[in-house]
Image 1 (cartoon, rainbow, N blue to C red):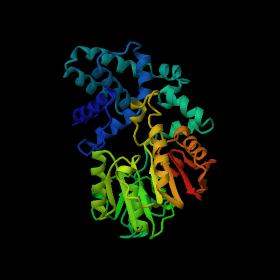
Image 2 (tube, helix red, strand yellow; image 1 turned 60 degrees about the vertical axis):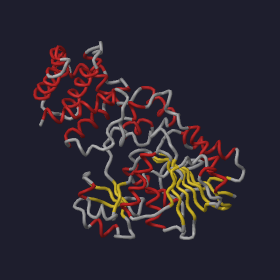
Image 3 (cartoon, rainbow, N blue to C red; image 1 turned 45 degrees about the vertical axis):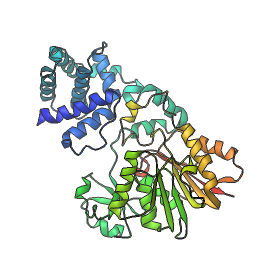
Image 4 (cartoon, rainbow, N blue to C red; image 1 turned 90 degrees about the vertical axis):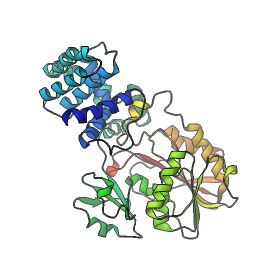
Length: 417
């Protein structure tokens, strides 16, 4: 079993280093493999600096390099017994087509133990080692948030909690808390619960019956900010996987809710979410930025744009972002964000509300994007969001990763004059 879970984690790491994402569903992985894969990914840049200190010439074979990184993680991050780890890692190489490299791997892993004090001292001021982020991303975050940057980078490496949203049309939060052994109510979301320990959704009471959904507290704030009433017509423009749409429907029961999603796989996920919760919004597979292809001509009272973004607010939940994003593609979604705002604004009624949201901490995707929109739309005005969170901006609200255990998120509420 020891070798088996390491083989799973090794395969995940090799695919990630080959520019493929981590598995979205780890259900087929042994729990130890999931933990090792996530921790190796989360601390990859730190582990890389250690490995490069020990062997300045990086092995050409990705398999051998991945085994080294995995071994360093188990010994120096997860504190597994050193000699057992080395034995298993060497075996992984011996049983591969790269078996001739087993002595090299054995020597480097043993050197990491023998020279631990030396590499710790040498790397003590190395930002990539300290924050376990690529240098370009460290620079961007620190430039954007000079005072909060260090804390953001540290929070990105902390394993996030599992947070639930109770469907209060089926059960109260207090009643559901009594069904759990170790959990607490969220601070800002009246439907939110934070579990002390993550568990499989199949073990959650009433999950299949729609009592509860998995959703970070920051994402749960959207429905309340929109101030929806039962007579409203609501649009969720980028709806998958369906968390915010279902929250709106469960809690506020608007007269009509339209959920738009373009990508086929995400649209299927969206439909599955609504099926589990027994909800029936008007689901349309389309490009929200081209309303001429799907809009029926009736204006909306409320519009939610949960815009595609860099994901820099959810790195702690998706640590592969640090490896898969690059300096030349981190702002890839700026044009799409601008188009969504411009194309959907005419669909909003006068005195209606549009909520722009991202899971990003980058001002270019957030407040600067909104400022540019307001500069060209005289009938638009940003209004205050009444939440006691510490980083209110001129336009909108920035939640940093780790604030009350939440993911990083940006919200800006805009009204049409």
